[in-house]
Length: 334
Ligand code: SF4
Image (cartoon, rainbow, N blue to C red; front, side, top):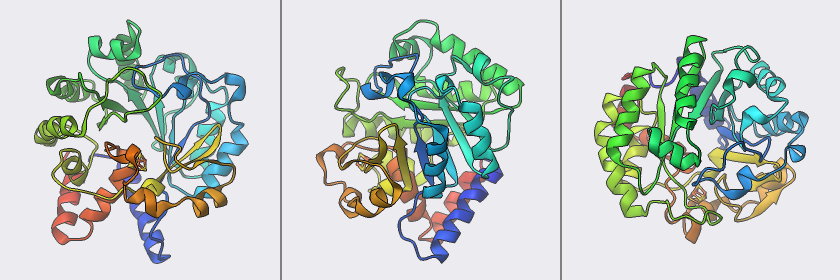
C-alpha cells in the first residue's frame, strides 16, 4: 500500500465525519511549526524558517491546543528543524496519545542523538526525511557537504530500528528528472516507505532563482507521472495530472492549516496574505477562503503544492466511479 492502512483509514473516517456534519471546508492536516530554528540554511527554504532563535520556540501546551482546536487527524511537525525542539518527545508522545498520525519533517542530521533511543517507533509516527536529490544536488541545496551521506545513513538506521520512513523531495529548476527517478529507485533500495515529490514554491524571501516556472513544472511532472507507477510515489494520480498541467484544480488551503511561532498563518503554509491570527476561531472565520480557493492572487499563480491541492485532487477523484476506482487501485498498487 502507498500509505499504512491505519493512516488511510484515519483520513477516510475524518472525511466521512465531515461529510455527515455537512462541512465543505475542514482541515485534514496541521503543519505544526514549534520553532523557526534550523541547523541548515537550504537554498529553497523561506528565510524566516531557519533564522529564528530557539528561545522564541512555542510552548508545548500551545501546540497541543492548536492541534485540539483544529481537529485534523494528521500533524505534520516541521519548522525549523523539529529535532532541535527540546520538547519533541513530549510533543510526539502527547500527539500519539490523542490518536494523531505524525509526520516529523527532518533533515535527519540529529536523528541519532535526538530520536533514536529517545522516541520509540510507533505505527502513528512517520519520519519524513528531506532529500532534494542525490549527493551532489542535495549537498548543494543544503549548502553543506556530507548532508546526503548522513541522511542516507540515518534512513538505514531508522528502518533497522523499525520506524516508518518517507522521503520528501522538492523539484527545482536545476533538478534533472532522471535524478528524481534515481531517488525513487533509492527508496526501494533503502526499503523506505515512500517518496513525496513536489515542485518548489517560489518564496519572495529567497534570493536565488532556483524555482520552476509553470511550464517547467508541467514538463518535469509529465515525465515523473510517467514513471511514478513503478515506484512508491506518495502523490495521488489526480495530483500528478494537475502537476503535469493535464487538469485544473481549485486550491483548498483550509485542508492543510499552519500554526507557527507567530500564530495561525493565513491563508496557508506558503504565504501570509492575510497575516497571522492568535486564535483558531478568528483564523478560521475571518480568512477569506473563497478568494484563496480561486487562485487569483498573483502569489498563487505558479503554486502547485501538495498542501494546497492534494485535498482537491482526492475530492475530484471521489466525484466519479472511475475516479474512485483509480484512487483505490493507486492506494493498493505498491
Ligand atoms: S495556491 Fe498555493 S500559495 Fe495560493 S493559497 Fe493555495 S497553497 Fe497557498
